Length: 495
Image 1 (cartoon, one colour):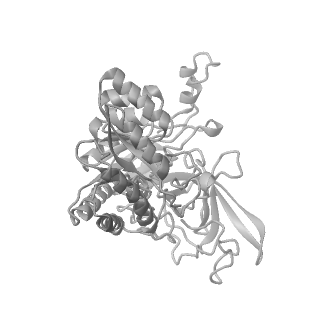
Image 2 (tube, rainbow, N blue to C red):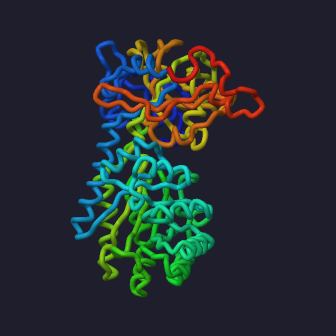
Image 3 (cartoon, one colour):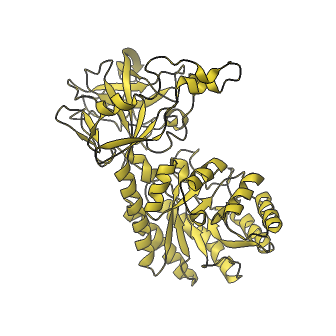
């Protein structure tokens, strides 16, 4: 992800003095960079953006704005490609691999079914995500259950339905599982989450394997945790889990983390600590990065798979141990690039800003969504791209900041982007790579309804997550009599 604080000095005479160093004016401000957009994204004869053969204006006429559009075929293709990459990489070393879709990236019953169709499992981390997966028909044995504070009722539910693996995160959780299995006389397989001490090169909120954070055990504490699990008669220890972070490019962090975790794995194998059927498992998580802007260069999934599995195989050979069953949990890299959010432009204004090279203008383009449907820019300083979607723009590209309608100066959707000079109120604007962590993080801040999610494939579109209306928000307010029947302003919510 480009650094929002990158060198602001213009890279060429056409670049605004306010632009970060990684962003240069495009030759064509209407272009669609393939790495950033869904595979089916095109412009039609009228210049409108199309996804899966459907023009953005047609989608907006049916579903309103904002609307999150998901290219279903792109998601399915990425899921199949990801699984095949890791299965093939493991097979080259005589091993096996499993792939779980990380539901936290974006989970609905439809998406869960797409994952099962692609022969992936599903990783969940809350009671709600578990119920969505079960409602979708995901076989419980293909579900992994994460979380640093799984409550007793959640563990009871997971064990009762036969969830395949619970990834334990604390000593207290081990005792809870032991008590539930003893009380219900049901067996449960677990992995132990460990922190390898490898720090992912990503936003510090997204780095999850350093020592000072809420997830997992240190390598030293994990060994004691496994010993306690072995004392519980109905709890089977399958292996170790380590997730180093999110939005990661390259394999270096994964290689180093695997080497450290395999030190512990080898000691546990020598002590005959693995008790689950099928042999030991090593789950290395996910976190594979995607392109949000033209400056991003994510590592191809086949290259990632080969590099990570090769590193594990090398480390196993050094230690003279067999290759464990490998497991991975990608989410963003499967669903993120397939999503595009469509907005309508409302107001536009330019402000003079003093910069290191003198005074320059920044254009603010306000849209009818914002941090309630995409909180990542405010949370992480995430960078996004944007393009006109209802037509092709004309005129020289102008540095623009796409902002939302919320009462926050930090309500930024796209921090830095060059858009055509003639952007005007009523235009449709498309922000790509919003398939992951946008809908799941959505809120009703300022009492703004959450938008619908629409899947498109083969020229057809259907709602897979219904949008909210203001009446839905009022229905939750216990101080309003008959709130469920409160009238809604014309044009609000899903069309």
